Length: 361
Image (spheres, rainbow, N blue to C red):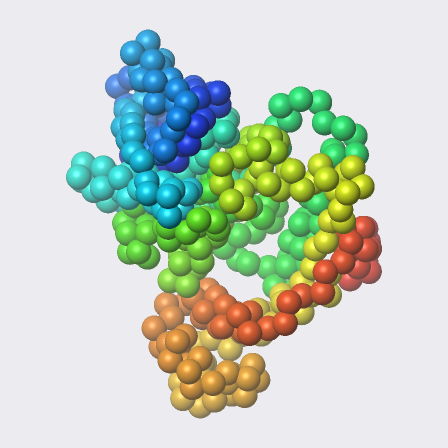
């Protein structure tokens, strides 16, 4: 069981973040359980930078602002085709894993965050504690406004949070995950992920995608039977800036919300009925395991969910270590060929959850 101050590496991709990266590093230097005698390891991959990002980190090191940290700063330039967050985060995490293994700490913890985030002093310790009963931990995203938001934007943010709380309430009502009990949040992004180095290497590391690399890593963990925990004690403050570095990251989402709040677009999300059907299907799949590992059991599952011999070969039920792996593998096959879900305006979707849950979410 990991404990506060245990062997850990925080892995951060950074591109032209001279203004915000120092804030993140200062929050890492203030983490509970670490000191000059027991330093928290940090890997920063400064890729394709044209500002003073590298020099800012070097200055912090020279001024002894990182005395409680052991920092490995990697300055690199990726070719245009691979100059994106997936490549940079992969290099940071791989470097962190190699560092732990070389120090004889293969079961040490890898954490990743974003250069524009900043962390409470409990962040590392809370992650280590949550990993005692999980293979990967996602941190809750708390929007930290860099300036006073327009009330319409703040109201939209609150309603979006209500929507995702309603999704989790539906799960708790129909198919509560024993390994991720309420109260829990629903976030697992690159701004806050944690897992053991040996498990990270066992699943093949982070897929170096130009977007969605964080969710792809979580999917790899779950398809290996790993438990995903959304511990309420783990959270990270994220910027509400609308200009970012990563495709599909938080900044484009903030820009989208501002456009919606100004009346320039609609905020569409899957209906409550979509989630209701999805949760029920996953619950049914969970009940089918481990019977599905037998020939007769698989035949019944295949009939019920319209699965083919090709699906059987891709899913390999006999190799699933637990129900998590089975549900995730089957679900991804089904979702890949399913029709896109019905999208509704946010308020209509919230009303749908109210009807399903018997109260306003």
